[in-house]
Image 1 (cartoon, rainbow, N blue to C red):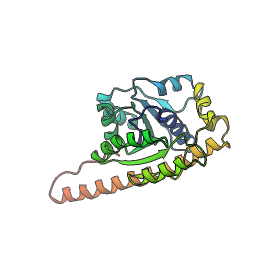
Image 2: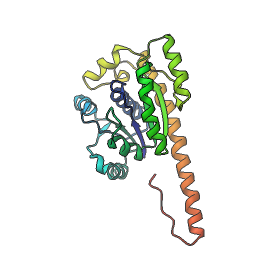
Image 3: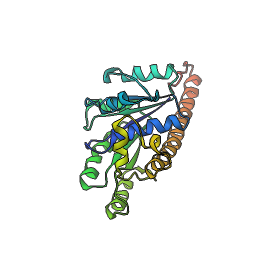
Image 4: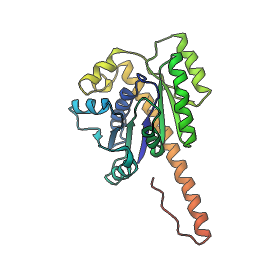
Length: 234
């Protein structure tokens, strides 16, 4: 199972909207069954899911103290992709989520405040040795600050080649538990999410494959010294 965490210290970065859209597009694209976890006390992702008419993605209740166990339980139930929303602050909650994530997606609006706030999240992700991807979110088309933000973020980590632009259809679709892809899959907003998921899917595949290769090598070395190899959890 592949685990994606949407994390950002800055409130209003669009984490919840992005998490919901990524989860739905992953299911549409065949990466399901998909489950979502909402670790933000505000519960916005859970509220969105409760408004949905579609049966996917699945919603799983969890407590941060047992998130690792619940992730493994979802894997045993056949879940292939898990998307986790997090609180807008650097807390032990985010640390626990990042520890179980294969990829951390950091949405960032192209503003000085958001760029500065991203630093704390990056430091935590790097300290825990996880892969991260910045996504410029809620950008104004052809605005100079968007290009400047892209340059700044790319100096501190991997930047997704897809920019998500500010449009009212994102908020409108979330009101009744939908996504822009489910309203009009050919609209500009939907196409951005589709392209973003294609990129994240590729990154996840490389990340998880690399982890399995490393685990395989480690097991071989241990058996060479007469120790019993331990199967990787992914």
